[in-house]
Length: 121
Image (cartoon, rainbow, N blue to C red; front, top):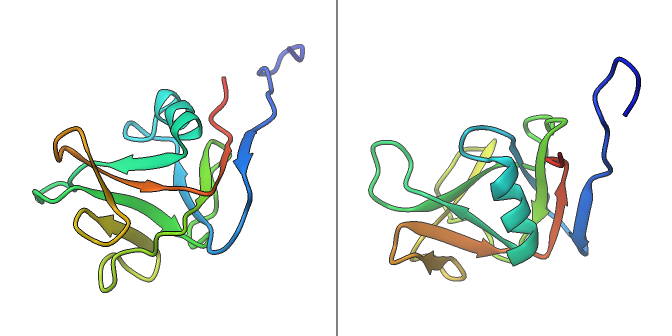
């Protein structure tokens, strides 16, 4: 620990980077525990967005939002659902090729090929 400062840890990196990159910032829906599970499983999961009944994985596209000092950056071989999301946000909806159903339809999940986790304790 640095005197008067926070303890610092190196990011956890798994897989091989590719393109495009996506990122998710640490938040109540992207917790330290979530990030650790994403590294272990090499999957990113998502629930239905507020007001929707369809589970989806949500992330920022290609650094359209600057990566948070805490969060994850990832790559996936599964393309976002066409026509969904925004120029800044990607969404992968359950039912789209390559998007997986997890926990009896509560979550959508995508396999990832690379993850950089800066949500380390």
